[in-house]
Length: 111
Image (cartoon, rainbow, N blue to C red; front, side, top):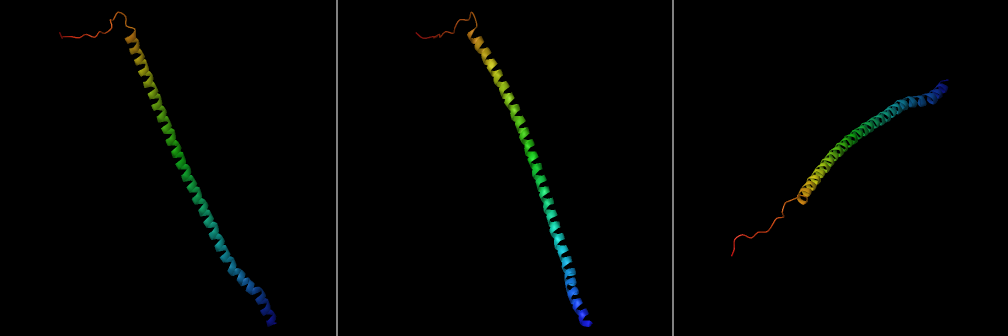
């Protein structure tokens, strides 16, 4: 009977002990892999959030630059129109003044 018990113990005991030794190791490795994947995903999410924030900041700066350049363009255009009106007014005054004799070249002194 002892031989039979020994055979049963060997057939059940060795795989059972091995199974109970391997399962905790598998659990630790599995937990570690899962935790590392979770940390990687969290890091990627934070990284992508950081990149998205940077893009939003760049978009806002471009929008501000566009508004500023538009204001300068409008200001320059207004100044150019004012100069054209002034020049047109001066040209009208110069060419359309009635009863003004033209300038004469006069030499003074001499023999």
